[in-house]
Image 1: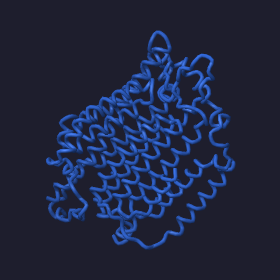
Image 2 (image 1 turned 90 degrees about the vertical axis):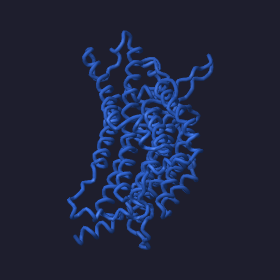
Image 3 (image 1 turned 135 degrees about the horizontal axis):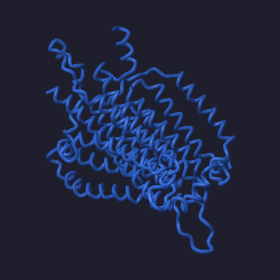
Image 4 (image 1 turned 180 degrees about the vertical axis):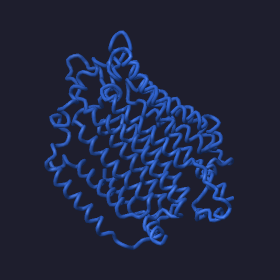
Length: 335
Length: 121
């Protein structure tokens, strides 16, 4: 905990954005460890994969394009500091009205949670309650969130993938002041000569992908599920792209496939919902998918999680490809 | 007793740091980092609320006959935060891609410089 505070303070103080990004990764990872100690294994899983893995890669990708030095500034921001302290003071005062930490009788734990805990093993038949709440009880929410990820993936692609319009010769040589140090090709990371990363990555990647599949399909029983698996799978491929090169990764999964997969995941999810309507139930009513409700729930959750996993993988990869592709385009223009 | 609020206090401190970073730094990437910190602090808050002392992760375990039934921590905040993390990274990516475009359009990612250029234009 104190490590967290120290970490975040340094993030604030450090001028070099690259260092700040690394520290953010460390903070995320520490946070994941804390989540484990707070019994939130599923969340810890996600936080470790997302916070310490994918987001760090994305920040570095951005920094490669925008340069990593923050402007030196001496002005002291008194206004924001005052606001922050005020907010903090109000919140601090409010904690004294909070129910004590860790009591089973707290209001948070009294409302719907007991029902989930008591009934989900018999109603859904899935040991991991987080999965059953995620995919079944709160299936609508998750559908919405999957769609958000889908939209974000599309958005990033649209923003970054447009070829930079070559303004007819007149303006061409302005080329916006991008040729500062700090711009670089990300494919440069896939150096031909780094033997150690190559060998290690070759050994690791199959296991990462296997592990992702395990997390995907074992999500009913242990911590895991579509979101985590998607991120881990994407992380495996991102690692591949970083160590070898983007071209190699594109050869494995190209952008068209990714676009298709992104839509496919949402379609699977929506399709499961529509199927249950066609079978005479409500949207995402898994009970009707098989002869007995518990089996139906199993099937429904499995399919829905698969949809989520596919969309998340594809969206993460789409975002990553967009960033790296952009960096390369800039690097080419500089040549 | 007062130590029972420790998690909440850490949450507040992290939240303040995040908020301050967003408001006081003019570098857009730094602002995004601040936003991420802010997010992480809220995650901590939710998960802390769901924790029950002496509880275990909300995955059904087989109990020995006669033993006390296990106490599970609240699964609901876990679900909410789990999805929030992934949605968070997706939106962060969107923000970063906008930053990249701003860099291309203005040649800087410093808020003050951008405003200056806008005024001069």
